[in-house]
Image 1: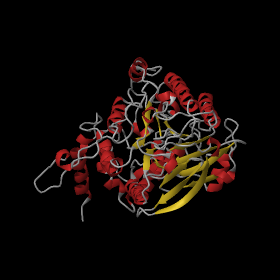
Image 2: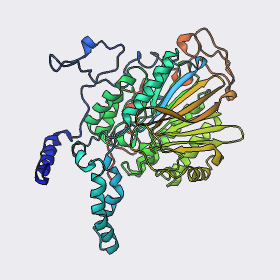
Image 3: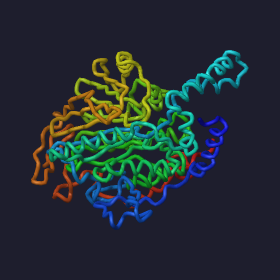
Image 4: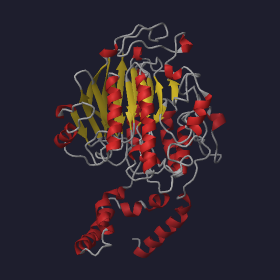
Length: 518
């Protein structure tokens, strides 16, 4: 049996040895994504008898893994069109978020908070703290010795506990099944919190290695979450290196279209907009959000087909982050402007993360439905949410841009999960799958998506819609390289506009990624 003294020495030695890993910095030696990868030329060997080590590669790299060349317009932060994924064949998309790992000791948060409050003259707080100390020790040691096992992770700021592997394996199995049926998965979308702390390169290296079996097969599009720490120089630089997305500066919002140009995906950067911990100044929050939502509305209104918006902080939820979009009139106005624009476009889906659970609600008008999905069960420790009936009641209190949320149109569940979205001309559906500890899946939700308002356009031999395509605002052009006019957002690339947007600091900042002194 190990004596307490020896255990203490061992833990101290481990902390000293691992301290060098706990450094913020820039992610290095990450190459662009290429396809296919030749193992004999891209692998490194650490020893004669050791298997080759796959070098780290960004999620997005070149047109072979993502978009048709020549379709991007960086002035509009429009990345172009997917190479695969035609609505005529049924578009398949995978949605998930918050895969980042956590600490087992996170279960001690209530006790730790009571212990912190002991620094007080209030005898009640002191008493609660004294009681919390032995409770924290017992909870931290049983049943899994979390306080001891997590010392290396705490020192490195790199936890590894969670269900990330199981969810990833379940998604991969689903993709394998679809591909065995000769069906194409056009993209995987992650709604944020890819890593525990984006300022530490080691967390990104782990993520890229774990994700490689998926990202090497399917175009992978992430949204910046709060754990990516894009408020810091290291965080935003590591984000850009690891994702490889062709967007510059610290403006991390972008959009892209399906291969036929019919469905638009818009990724928002809600970190400097919601910002509950005040990493950005109030001036930046207000002006940056105005800039980004002006861009969002323009991208929605110029598009004819359905729109899917991805973001990290959910504008609608029943969990602990419910009030983040409602804490001041500016945020409420931004949310209302976004919902109004989506309503006017006819139909939309908002996919978000942040609340570690599955939540789905339908915002309805007499002429349209907006689907709000919180798909944040990709591996991070689950958050407690109210029981289903109470969650439905909380959702029913929302009344944004004239919408109504009926309790019967709400479903919530505390589960690890992912979503399979299918769209075709005239309709669609999505299915949510819970994932257990053995990576087995079970369907927990299925929702029909009505796209009848857009009609069923005629297509050419390239599966491209022929104008005029019936929709809420008239005709839609197809791609220039298919012999048709290009969408307005991709019609040209203004070099001067691109340079101004990509290199200039956002409003209120003196330099990119630096906070303005208070």
